[in-house]
Image (cartoon, rainbow, N blue to C red; front, side, top):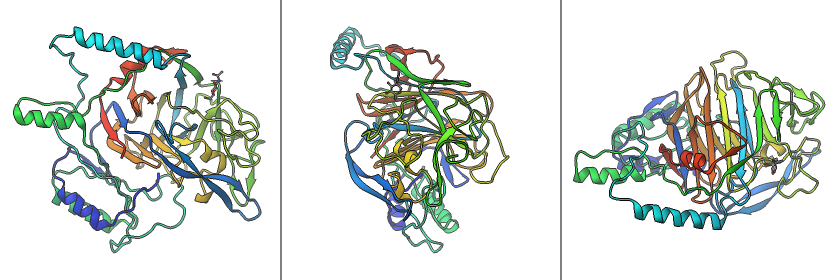
Length: 471
Ligand SMILES: *[C@@H]1O[C@H](CO)[C@@H](O)[C@H](O)[C@H]1NC(C)=O
């Protein structure tokens, strides 16, 4: 988790006081939660900016050097290679990565698809297919504001110091879901007075369909609508599975954790601690060579990650600099990609107090773990916005609400949540769609076979849910 803009508290309060309408949301354990959802649709993903790309890690001085790397284009920087991270308690049952099959999403395919679509539209009469209805049935316009504040006990804005490169350390998400400005202002002041460091994440996000529904509701009192349209540019062609895991079996993926130097892979140094290493089948120990994770529930607070099965070559530009002595593997890159997951997150209050019973699944720019995931912030590109996307994250111990958030040069998300699969499993797909710069996180029920058909993927893209427009 990280901070983005730093705003003075006063600015936030004045913004909040101008806002008037919102969802019913609850405040719990320092975070706002709104509606349960089965889909979160990020739009306007991708920006042009730069991050500090690590170029060396000096074991004598414990210092790291970096140079600015610019990026731009569809979904940037999340179009770069990503590694996939997990924190227990979690039992991972399936994981896979798909890319467009040869010729899919090609210009000619898309042209053909557009022509077909135009023909379809022309054939249609006034009868519209009913849209997949979201659970919410009240038309509301949600206005949120993105900002982060760090304040001292007196409520004065401060610049954060120290190590922020640990999930959750500085973050108290305060999402303003505003019934009325005054109440929210009071709430925020209460929060501010009880925390020394407050990270406020409020998202500027006018939900398009809801707004349209609100205006038509003004004309006709009977009208109501779901919170978001699931409309997204269609993909053309099928998707091929490139990496896959089921317990005890991997194809083109590599399980790692942070046991460098303990069991025959990776390194330990006094400067940078334990590097990443191959993970043993228990997910927790290190291993000398790659192993498939077993059918295990990885304990509360323990973390593992997945890279592809493809090793980084020497001077491999897409991998960039890696810490000496680590097993360095490629992540999952590209503008168009689909991650699929099936997992359970049973309750587990054993183990250390740190991150206890706070399971999570998230994506990082794969350069981060190959340099330094936890430690001196100048030793990875994380702090300068090379990319983190939280897909399913429990924010307070024992919570059953999984939150998603993007932290990179853009910052945003929604306080709508997926239900934590305490019993049973959650099956989900995360679709990176460069056709319209969206990322869809959707609960699904289909099988994760060798190939995902165009129809399957387009049906996933059409699932309505909660929108999260990035700034
Ligand atoms: C293995 O994964 C990498 C990274 O996603 C990909 O580039 C490569 O094509 C995959 N290999 C196969 C055989 O699918």
